[in-house]
Image (cartoon, rainbow, N blue to C red; front, side, top):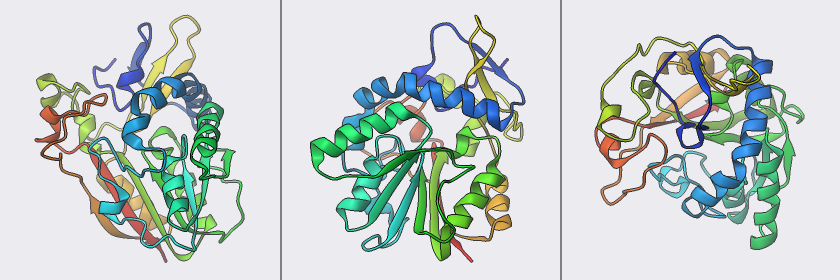
Length: 278
């Protein structure tokens, strides 16, 4: 058992068993798809205004792609968002002249994407799928990105990065944001209790929530160290060009799960990796 609860804190059910144990890619997928289907309505109601219908936010600190410039120019480019949710980031790409396409494991999230398409008139073609088996041809995208999307929810990270490399053209850009790996040493508490390290940074055992009635996993998140991320990027032909660690903005006072001003002023909460293929 562990008291550390990563980025899923704000949807943690009242009755759930929490543990750290090994779990397969297939079981991770079976848990996380239905979990996001259940959580999608609440997520969009709670965070939709902050994200913006055609907005691009890299994490709870509010760092925007307009500020970060992690993707590089998108106009005229074919851009895939892995773990696209309601397509806010892909819609930002499309609104700036790119060809944004979304992929998500959750059908309910993609239904929200269709709703926002209709409300805004900015349409993002989207497909149900997983990062480890992208349903696209080789060399078909200029940019692949994931903003707190699929990558930390899958067990087979090398397969996901291999797939990203496969669908990218040589010289293409791959960018993604995740919970900052150092956060896994701390309880996911937005208050002062979340400022004391309570477990090893090097413990990569996945975080698993289990339905106590059925014994089946209902939510899974996977931890890798900064070194792990760099190694798997390099192993799939990527060259790391930037690692951004957004600081907490002076006037930002939003609490989102374990992210808060109390913690954000002292320890990083988000890591944004930017890499080029080849």
